[in-house]
Image (cartoon, rainbow, N blue to C red; front, side):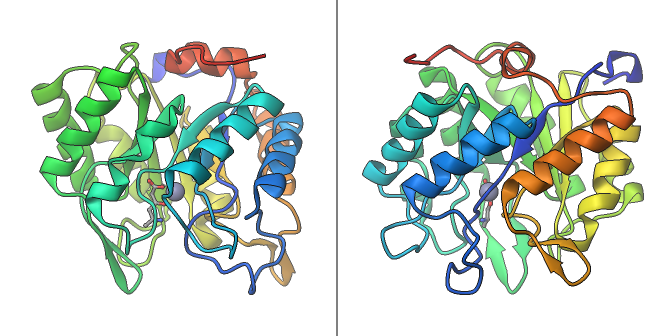
Length: 284
Ligand code: KMH
Ligand code: ZN
């Protein structure tokens, strides 16, 4: 990607829930369908244009159950104009074949992690065959993947994926650097810039997120380098030292404020749909 193609505005993705934090530990985490929709509406108003969803069951545990996924997709789609992205990463304990069923819920977009990585004490498995199966399924169903890059090796694997399978539905290639996962790529501007420098020319936009303490430094680094942002309680539970996040809206609003100061204001959902070449599945 050439710096000349830096966007004038900023795509803000919110990842409100994730699969790692227990509701009992963080009651502010949106885990019910009602909380998810309320969060989506509030975050859209605060400047988000895309939502990355992990679904929980009625006991607030992570699930890939199709009925829960469909309920989440339909609920957010009815209440907002956000681009609806489902996680295909799930939790580290989720089996690969179950993760391949996520697209049955008909999201606009899906995450697609470009390789296996350390994930704290666990291993987040993404073997080559799984990546190819998921990518081909997304192409067939006209779902736009967001390529998740946790490691520099994942950038190289993206090159191989494009060579072997071609471009995604719509022809745009959007990637997200997930930095600061313990044991994976560190959440530093230096590591992020190394990844950006390696991006294949087919990449049309990139965003970044920093886990935990890396959150704000990565916001600043990504904006400075022409990237887009992902924020949310999946990645960061602290608004500041000693001050927990009370609502995902706060993280989105702060990201939008910083983007505004950097003269790259938050992108509308219409602009985001164009940027990512999203097929219109809206019902309202
Ligand atoms: N929960 C992580 C194991 C994704 O959503 O695609 C995987 C993850 C990535 O969050
Ligand atoms: Zn996720």
